[in-house]
Amino acid sequence: MWTDNETAQDFLNFRSVAATVAEIIEQAQSRPISIGVSGAWGVGKSSMIKLIRSELEDGTAESKYIFVEFNAWLYQGYDDARAALIEVVASTLAKVAEERKTGIEQTKDLLGRVNWFRAVKLVAGSAASMALGLPPTGLLGEVLELGKHVLAGQIDQDKLDSAGEITGEVGKSTEGLINAKKVRSPPKEIEALRKSFESVLEKLGVTLVVLIDDLDRCLPETTISTLEAIRLLLFLKHTAFVIAADDQMIKHAVKRHFQGVEDDLVTNYFDKLIHAMCNFQNETKPSRCRQGRPS
Image (cartoon, rainbow, N blue to C red; front, side):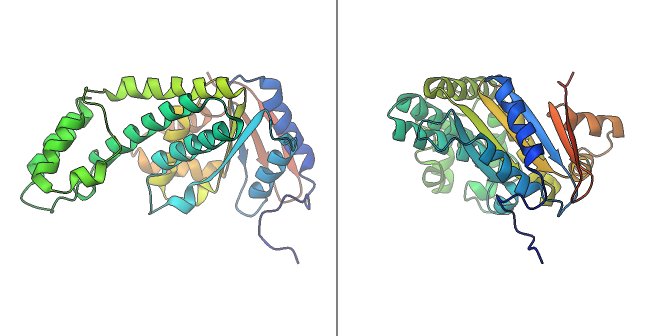
Protein backbone atom coordinates (compact mmCIF):
# COMPACT_ATOMS: atom_id res chain seq x y z
CA MET A 1 0.00 0.00 0.00
CA TRP A 2 1.32 3.44 -0.90
CA THR A 3 1.12 6.31 1.57
CA ASP A 4 -0.49 9.63 0.71
CA ASN A 5 2.76 11.52 1.37
CA GLU A 6 4.44 13.48 -1.40
CA THR A 7 7.59 11.97 -2.84
CA ALA A 8 10.34 12.77 -5.35
CA GLN A 9 10.16 9.16 -6.59
CA ASP A 10 8.00 8.73 -9.67
CA PHE A 11 5.57 6.02 -8.59
CA LEU A 12 2.78 7.28 -10.87
CA ASN A 13 4.70 7.90 -14.12
CA PHE A 14 4.44 11.67 -13.78
CA ARG A 15 8.05 12.28 -14.81
CA SER A 16 7.12 13.11 -18.41
CA VAL A 17 4.66 15.79 -17.30
CA ALA A 18 7.21 17.19 -14.82
CA ALA A 19 9.74 17.32 -17.64
CA THR A 20 7.25 19.22 -19.81
CA VAL A 21 6.65 21.80 -17.06
CA ALA A 22 10.40 22.17 -16.54
CA GLU A 23 10.85 22.62 -20.27
CA ILE A 24 8.22 25.40 -20.34
CA ILE A 25 10.15 27.21 -17.59
CA GLU A 26 13.47 26.75 -19.38
CA GLN A 27 12.05 27.90 -22.72
CA ALA A 28 10.74 31.08 -21.07
CA GLN A 29 14.40 32.16 -20.85
CA SER A 30 13.90 34.42 -17.82
CA ARG A 31 10.61 35.80 -19.10
CA PRO A 32 7.85 35.60 -16.47
CA ILE A 33 5.81 32.40 -16.53
CA SER A 34 3.08 30.92 -14.34
CA ILE A 35 1.95 27.30 -14.56
CA GLY A 36 -1.03 25.66 -12.91
CA VAL A 37 -0.96 22.01 -11.88
CA SER A 38 -4.61 21.15 -11.41
CA GLY A 39 -6.27 18.04 -10.07
CA ALA A 40 -8.44 16.72 -7.27
CA TRP A 41 -7.06 15.93 -3.81
CA GLY A 42 -4.87 12.86 -3.69
CA VAL A 43 -3.93 12.63 -7.37
CA GLY A 44 -0.28 13.49 -6.74
CA LYS A 45 0.08 17.25 -7.16
CA SER A 46 2.54 17.59 -4.27
CA SER A 47 4.69 14.81 -5.70
CA MET A 48 4.52 16.54 -9.08
CA ILE A 49 5.88 19.71 -7.47
CA LYS A 50 8.90 17.81 -6.18
CA LEU A 51 9.44 16.10 -9.53
CA ILE A 52 9.39 19.47 -11.31
CA ARG A 53 12.01 20.79 -8.92
CA SER A 54 14.21 17.76 -9.42
CA GLU A 55 13.96 18.23 -13.21
CA LEU A 56 15.27 21.80 -12.91
CA GLU A 57 17.93 21.24 -10.25
CA ASP A 58 21.45 20.71 -11.53
CA GLY A 59 23.07 20.02 -8.15
CA THR A 60 25.57 22.90 -8.37
CA ALA A 61 26.07 25.73 -5.90
CA GLU A 62 25.74 28.26 -8.73
CA SER A 63 22.48 26.93 -10.14
CA LYS A 64 20.57 29.29 -12.41
CA TYR A 65 17.39 28.52 -10.47
CA ILE A 66 16.46 29.43 -6.91
CA PHE A 67 13.54 27.52 -5.44
CA VAL A 68 10.98 28.59 -2.88
CA GLU A 69 8.41 26.02 -1.76
CA PHE A 70 5.45 27.69 -0.07
CA ASN A 71 2.54 25.95 1.61
CA ALA A 72 -0.09 28.57 2.48
CA TRP A 73 -2.05 26.01 4.50
CA LEU A 74 0.75 25.87 7.11
CA TYR A 75 0.47 29.62 7.72
CA GLN A 76 -3.31 29.69 7.94
CA GLY A 77 -4.40 31.13 11.26
CA TYR A 78 -0.84 32.10 12.27
CA ASP A 79 0.25 34.69 9.74
CA ASP A 80 -1.01 36.73 6.82
CA ALA A 81 -0.39 34.52 3.79
CA ARG A 82 0.31 37.48 1.52
CA ALA A 83 3.02 38.96 3.74
CA ALA A 84 4.36 35.49 4.60
CA LEU A 85 4.94 34.52 0.96
CA ILE A 86 6.71 37.77 0.14
CA GLU A 87 8.89 37.49 3.24
CA VAL A 88 9.81 33.86 2.55
CA VAL A 89 10.86 34.77 -1.01
CA ALA A 90 12.89 37.80 0.16
CA SER A 91 14.59 35.83 2.94
CA THR A 92 15.55 33.06 0.52
CA LEU A 93 17.08 35.57 -1.89
CA ALA A 94 18.99 37.21 0.96
CA LYS A 95 20.41 33.84 2.02
CA VAL A 96 21.53 33.05 -1.54
CA ALA A 97 23.11 36.51 -1.87
CA GLU A 98 25.12 35.89 1.31
CA GLU A 99 26.24 32.48 0.07
CA ARG A 100 27.28 33.80 -3.34
CA LYS A 101 28.75 37.05 -1.99
CA THR A 102 26.86 39.16 -4.52
CA GLY A 103 23.69 41.25 -4.54
CA ILE A 104 23.89 41.74 -0.77
CA GLU A 105 23.06 45.46 -0.87
CA GLN A 106 20.14 44.84 -3.20
CA THR A 107 18.69 42.19 -0.88
CA LYS A 108 19.03 44.53 2.10
CA ASP A 109 16.96 47.10 0.22
CA LEU A 110 14.43 44.39 -0.66
CA LEU A 111 14.11 43.22 2.95
CA GLY A 112 13.59 46.80 4.06
CA ARG A 113 10.71 47.17 1.63
CA VAL A 114 9.21 43.88 2.79
CA ASN A 115 9.40 45.17 6.38
CA TRP A 116 7.49 48.28 5.33
CA PHE A 117 4.90 46.07 3.66
CA ARG A 118 4.49 44.12 6.91
CA ALA A 119 4.24 47.33 8.97
CA VAL A 120 1.39 48.58 6.80
CA LYS A 121 -0.35 45.23 7.22
CA LEU A 122 -0.14 45.71 11.00
CA VAL A 123 -2.23 48.87 10.91
CA ALA A 124 -4.59 48.16 8.02
CA GLY A 125 -7.84 46.23 7.91
CA SER A 126 -10.21 44.94 10.55
CA ALA A 127 -7.37 43.61 12.74
CA ALA A 128 -5.83 47.06 13.24
CA SER A 129 -6.80 47.44 16.87
CA MET A 130 -5.36 44.04 17.83
CA ALA A 131 -2.17 44.60 15.88
CA LEU A 132 -1.66 47.95 17.59
CA GLY A 133 -2.36 46.54 21.04
CA LEU A 134 -5.45 48.69 21.48
CA PRO A 135 -8.35 47.79 23.76
CA PRO A 136 -11.56 47.01 21.89
CA THR A 137 -13.26 50.21 23.11
CA GLY A 138 -12.33 53.76 24.02
CA LEU A 139 -9.67 54.42 21.40
CA LEU A 140 -11.37 52.93 18.37
CA GLY A 141 -11.62 56.36 16.74
CA GLU A 142 -7.86 56.77 16.80
CA VAL A 143 -7.40 53.37 15.20
CA LEU A 144 -9.89 54.16 12.44
CA GLU A 145 -8.18 57.48 11.80
CA LEU A 146 -4.82 55.74 11.52
CA GLY A 147 -6.37 53.21 9.15
CA LYS A 148 -7.62 56.05 6.94
CA HIS A 149 -4.06 57.39 6.68
CA VAL A 150 -2.86 53.93 5.64
CA LEU A 151 -5.47 53.58 2.91
CA ALA A 152 -4.79 57.14 1.72
CA GLY A 153 -1.10 56.40 1.39
CA GLN A 154 -0.20 58.86 4.17
CA ILE A 155 1.24 56.48 6.76
CA ASP A 156 4.68 57.28 8.08
CA GLN A 157 6.73 56.71 11.22
CA ASP A 158 5.46 59.92 12.85
CA LYS A 159 1.87 58.71 12.73
CA LEU A 160 2.89 55.33 14.12
CA ASP A 161 4.79 57.06 16.92
CA SER A 162 1.74 59.19 17.65
CA ALA A 163 -0.37 56.07 17.93
CA GLY A 164 2.32 54.62 20.17
CA GLU A 165 1.88 57.50 22.62
CA ILE A 166 -1.80 56.63 22.80
CA THR A 167 -1.42 52.90 23.36
CA GLY A 168 2.07 52.54 24.77
CA GLU A 169 2.52 49.47 22.61
CA VAL A 170 2.69 50.52 18.97
CA GLY A 171 6.36 51.44 19.11
CA LYS A 172 7.17 47.90 20.23
CA SER A 173 4.92 46.32 17.60
CA THR A 174 6.44 48.25 14.72
CA GLU A 175 10.00 48.73 15.96
CA GLY A 176 12.47 48.06 13.17
CA LEU A 177 9.80 47.85 10.51
CA ILE A 178 9.66 51.50 9.52
CA ASN A 179 12.69 53.73 9.87
CA ALA A 180 12.07 56.52 7.34
CA LYS A 181 10.39 59.76 8.37
CA LYS A 182 8.98 60.55 4.96
CA VAL A 183 5.51 59.66 3.75
CA ARG A 184 5.59 56.47 1.67
CA SER A 185 2.55 55.76 -0.47
CA PRO A 186 1.49 52.11 -0.98
CA PRO A 187 1.29 52.32 -4.82
CA LYS A 188 4.81 53.70 -5.06
CA GLU A 189 6.16 51.25 -2.51
CA ILE A 190 4.57 48.27 -4.28
CA GLU A 191 6.14 49.32 -7.57
CA ALA A 192 9.48 49.85 -5.79
CA LEU A 193 9.12 46.41 -4.21
CA ARG A 194 8.63 44.81 -7.63
CA LYS A 195 11.61 46.66 -9.07
CA SER A 196 13.70 45.64 -6.07
CA PHE A 197 12.83 41.97 -6.64
CA GLU A 198 13.84 42.23 -10.28
CA SER A 199 17.07 44.00 -9.36
CA VAL A 200 18.06 41.25 -6.93
CA LEU A 201 17.30 38.45 -9.39
CA GLU A 202 19.21 40.19 -12.17
CA LYS A 203 22.20 40.78 -9.91
CA LEU A 204 22.21 37.13 -8.85
CA GLY A 205 21.72 35.98 -12.45
CA VAL A 206 19.04 33.48 -11.49
CA THR A 207 15.41 32.63 -12.12
CA LEU A 208 13.20 32.42 -9.04
CA VAL A 209 10.94 29.35 -9.14
CA VAL A 210 8.13 29.59 -6.58
CA LEU A 211 6.31 26.32 -5.97
CA ILE A 212 2.90 26.83 -4.34
CA ASP A 213 1.23 23.77 -2.83
CA ASP A 214 -1.96 22.90 -0.91
CA LEU A 215 -3.69 26.13 -1.91
CA ASP A 216 -6.95 24.24 -2.31
CA ARG A 217 -6.82 23.16 1.35
CA CYS A 218 -7.00 26.75 2.57
CA LEU A 219 -9.98 28.82 3.63
CA PRO A 220 -11.14 31.28 0.96
CA GLU A 221 -9.49 34.24 2.73
CA THR A 222 -6.09 32.53 2.80
CA THR A 223 -6.46 31.35 -0.79
CA ILE A 224 -7.19 34.88 -2.02
CA SER A 225 -4.36 36.39 0.07
CA THR A 226 -1.88 33.97 -1.46
CA LEU A 227 -3.16 34.61 -4.99
CA GLU A 228 -2.87 38.35 -4.36
CA ALA A 229 0.75 37.92 -3.26
CA ILE A 230 1.44 35.84 -6.37
CA ARG A 231 -0.17 38.57 -8.49
CA LEU A 232 2.10 41.14 -6.84
CA LEU A 233 5.19 39.25 -8.00
CA LEU A 234 3.82 38.01 -11.32
CA PHE A 235 5.08 39.28 -14.65
CA LEU A 236 8.50 40.12 -13.24
CA LYS A 237 11.56 39.08 -15.23
CA HIS A 238 13.40 36.00 -13.91
CA THR A 239 10.33 34.55 -12.17
CA ALA A 240 8.38 31.33 -12.59
CA PHE A 241 5.39 30.26 -10.51
CA VAL A 242 4.03 26.72 -10.32
CA ILE A 243 0.69 26.58 -8.52
CA ALA A 244 -0.60 23.14 -7.50
CA ALA A 245 -4.28 23.20 -6.65
CA ASP A 246 -7.70 21.96 -7.62
CA ASP A 247 -8.83 24.79 -9.88
CA GLN A 248 -12.45 24.12 -8.97
CA MET A 249 -11.64 24.75 -5.30
CA ILE A 250 -9.81 27.95 -6.26
CA LYS A 251 -12.81 29.16 -8.22
CA HIS A 252 -15.03 28.32 -5.24
CA ALA A 253 -12.78 30.46 -2.99
CA VAL A 254 -12.90 33.34 -5.46
CA LYS A 255 -16.68 33.13 -5.65
CA ARG A 256 -16.97 33.08 -1.84
CA HIS A 257 -14.60 36.01 -1.43
CA PHE A 258 -16.04 38.19 -4.20
CA GLN A 259 -19.69 37.55 -3.46
CA GLY A 260 -22.14 38.31 -6.21
CA VAL A 261 -19.70 38.11 -9.13
CA GLU A 262 -20.71 36.20 -12.23
CA ASP A 263 -19.27 32.76 -13.00
CA ASP A 264 -17.37 34.07 -16.03
CA LEU A 265 -15.55 36.59 -13.84
CA VAL A 266 -14.71 33.87 -11.31
CA THR A 267 -13.14 31.79 -14.07
CA ASN A 268 -11.26 34.74 -15.52
CA TYR A 269 -9.73 35.69 -12.16
CA PHE A 270 -7.76 32.45 -11.93
CA ASP A 271 -7.17 32.03 -15.65
CA LYS A 272 -5.53 35.45 -15.91
CA LEU A 273 -2.88 34.32 -13.40
CA ILE A 274 -1.97 31.23 -15.37
CA HIS A 275 0.01 30.98 -18.60
CA ALA A 276 -0.01 27.17 -18.86
CA MET A 277 -2.16 24.51 -17.23
CA CYS A 278 -1.55 20.82 -16.55
CA ASN A 279 -4.75 19.00 -15.63
CA PHE A 280 -4.78 15.60 -13.91
CA GLN A 281 -7.74 13.52 -14.98
CA ASN A 282 -7.09 10.74 -12.51
CA GLU A 283 -4.27 9.16 -10.52
CA THR A 284 -2.59 7.44 -13.45
CA LYS A 285 -3.46 9.45 -16.57
CA PRO A 286 -2.41 13.10 -16.37
CA SER A 287 -3.42 15.09 -19.40
CA ARG A 288 -0.88 17.02 -21.41
CA CYS A 289 -0.03 20.58 -20.52
CA ARG A 290 -1.63 23.28 -22.58
CA GLN A 291 0.09 26.60 -22.90
CA GLY A 292 -1.11 30.07 -23.75
CA ARG A 293 -0.87 33.59 -22.43
CA PRO A 294 -3.83 35.20 -20.69
CA SER A 295 -5.42 38.10 -22.51
